[in-house]
Length: 413
Image (cartoon, rainbow, N blue to C red):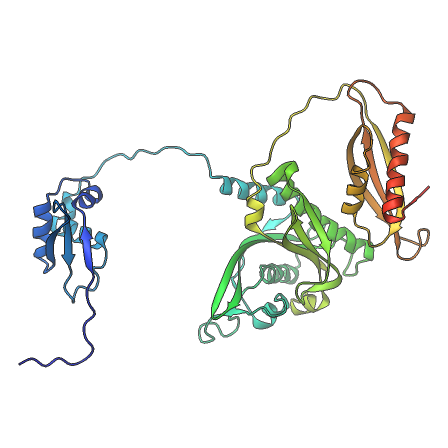
């Protein structure tokens, strides 16, 4: 008799083997009979498959648990025939291909930020639980590994910023000084728990920049300048990747996580879709990473940025006649955003308006509490002749009237 102890051996899968596949992989002629003979010598059951018997149906023995795929059987045939029988070519043909659009877009992104004084970094994917908690929103779960493997920093980063902040701390301890402040950027994956033991991995672009200024103290104007610096860097990337068709806006709002300071946070929108955030990092973050200089941070999802590429090009003839530039300053409420002002002016139907640009903002006793003076530059040009002063005054008056109606703005003398 026969006694069997232990669990039953698992049923072995039947594997379909195509002789044409064997010939394709080995690069040489091998007959179907030769293939069958080689496999049977290993204890593998072989039988014809299909109407014409062109293919083979193979049953691997239970002790050969490594044989589960067609390519495994091809490997066995090659081994038995001898690898020295496989023909080798002394030369390989190589065709030159242009870089893929995604790779070209990543190069453009890096070149733009490097040109703006940002240094690219590669930081660690793990962080401590307290640092991870600073960058997690309400209800968001962390993704962690076994504490026995990483007792000090078991959390996979929910944001790229902890790594950039750790790099900034290392530079501070090394007494690194850079004119205009230290600026970092990194493209990396972040990990966020989605419940039921699963997680989501997303590639993001992160920027971190010191607020320019002297010493460790910064004025309100310094902080505003720092936010504008990082916002301008993002706008530069968006314009380089998407051209004029890409529209970026920042919508002020409540911070998405404890890391950002109240009253200095905004959601970044790309063509009307929220793709990231920008803002000042709060005192809790500066304390946690032992930083003295206030910093501005931003994080943007990478895929929407790369999807903008390539930018559309526009070619136009050089202007034959000079333009007239006018700086317009209006006093309006603190909560009115430049994007809204720009839309209002552009929608006023100003004749011969060539361009509109933000110049600056002033706050002080002269404009009153809760209000600001916003200065913009309007450029007018006619393609057929030189404009007169009066022809530029009329659209300026129309712009002031539109701003007064929309926001209660007042012309600042």
